[in-house]
Length: 68
Image (cartoon, rainbow, N blue to C red; front, side, top):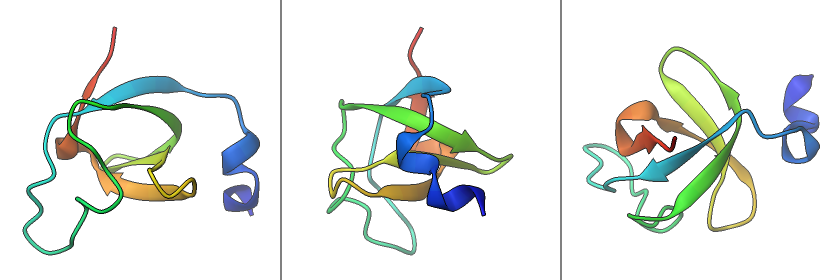
């Protein structure tokens, strides 16, 4: 049950939100373009970040670009 400890886990990397143009879901309520988010977990398709609501959410990787 790794999802219970995501918020307190060390950050894997940081990503910057580049857009909130979702085809299916409203993500503009919880993501802000230009803001940098901490990645707590990652899969092939998703980043799990602490969003604007303060909770960990899973979002498609195409909303982000990696911060170097």
